[in-house]
Length: 199
Image (cartoon, rainbow, N blue to C red):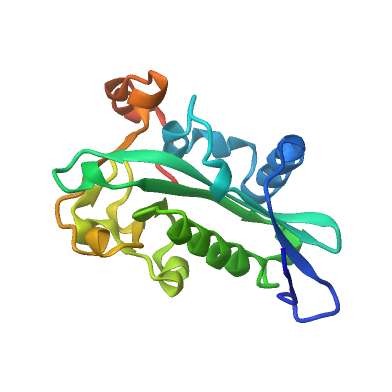
């Protein structure tokens, strides 16, 4: 991959596909960025027993050191329009806490969005701070008729990457890719009362 001078210094940032050998290092980085309780968040329920999309998982290396990660996961939508779309859940995206002002997160986001569009994703959905994600083109998912159970509606954001997705008004409920891996979707929704309502 082409290096980026995203840090504004002599340090060089490289965005690379996630490698299988990096699993433990990525988990350590995520724990440092979000804390050990991160897997109790509602959005993690959509990732259980589902493999991330390998072509949309990237890492950031600064001078050869892992400093950032972003992953995407398959989703389904239940609405009449949404059920036909190829939808991905973005997250987690994390940057080494010591380097959060260096532009690594923004570079990861732009790269991941470009690859998602290039490889045929119709829409990206995430749970996060609208003030941060608006700069990348994300809008309230409710604009597209998309709802995510047990999440604060303003934090559920969507980025349409195709004309079909941009025109959608009946996306429906966000569901895990259950029929792909044998997950019982109602079980996930019933679990809502015991999980932390956070991104």
